[in-house]
Image 1 (cartoon, rainbow, N blue to C red):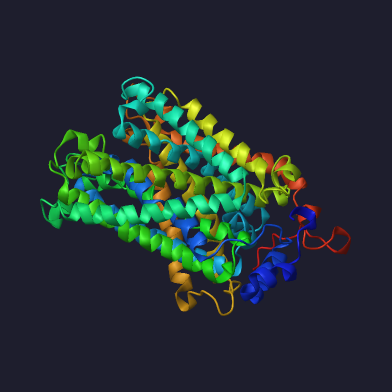
Image 2 (cartoon, rainbow, N blue to C red):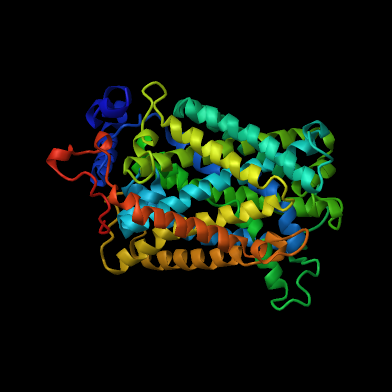
Length: 533
């Protein structure tokens, strides 16, 4: 049973999961330190947490969705943005590993920002992450349009797949996908974990087979990654400017690894398993994704084909491997997109639940309610799904829907990560940060790694938000408000959201009594935002 009558740590730590008893008690103690009592059932094992992280990153989803963009704006040499983004995100992930070892908690980014930077920074970081998750849910759903019509024209329900008809069909397919993930998440974490784990297994196997098949069809050497297609000539920054634009394609893939920790309250021994899952998911994605991109460039029959800049990896697979094998691979991509969407939705639900139990969202008591039957917060699943569909519908007539929504989603994620890494650096410099004893620790490398993580976050956020016509106003007449769309949208979300918090929600914040580790008449359970860890 869950909710106010959920079992205490000792009743879960023994018996059914006896081998994890000691760890279970410790992980529930970390919840108590944050002011919460354990309510979500610990049912997820090592592979489940790894699968959650890698399915959010989703190698096949990201590479197949934006390979065309990277090639079109950076040529084959855009491949170097892949290791660049990996190194930057690895710095962030290493910081997150220390936090996941000490605080494996639902809504990890929100709770970490709150613990390190105080309640105001925590709320802003959580708000940005929650909004970014809903935008990401819309962005990932658009990947169906990039793949399904390539399998069969039957999936092109609206128009011929060009211009506005592509955007309209993308919204239709995306809405169906979001409806599916909403239902699965509403029915509980066990069903989600089973589908997610099966999907990840298929994705990993398919990715490895795809690498081998592409490697067997190579027609040119690895020096292809030095070909710039002459892009950037005559521009102020030359090819470097084109490369920075193309890096969006890589930046879109390697984030979301914090999901492994966001399921910490539902995982066995997350203090040890979550850091491992974060690193394994990121490293595996880098290696497998990098090889897919490299061998795709080496094996595509015609590197100058215009379709390569339109259909991307889908064109590579079909033209290199043939229609039969190619379609099998593309169906695996569809599975990868589905479990990626499922993981994004799951992470958003945990974040909304975490903020709601701190009474930091409207109708918090309803949003933080855990269903006794499904043992998961159901209302956040429905609301997040509806908002994501709404984002798609608003952009239904925008041909540049893919790059715009994707870019804004990534920027907001990077900013949310900064709400953790920057306060963490400040606490390190003040000598206030102590990693969990006997678990993951950066030791003497903590400060330099943290500095690199912060610098990377600022630099890449600015790069992705830069008002480029290629990203924010690719077609149709040029409008300043489209070019500056990222700054305008994120500014409205951040300033508007924080204004609401400051004047309305701030006066109500505090752990709801039904979720508090200490009864109100014995202390102040809402005081969990102490910036000193």
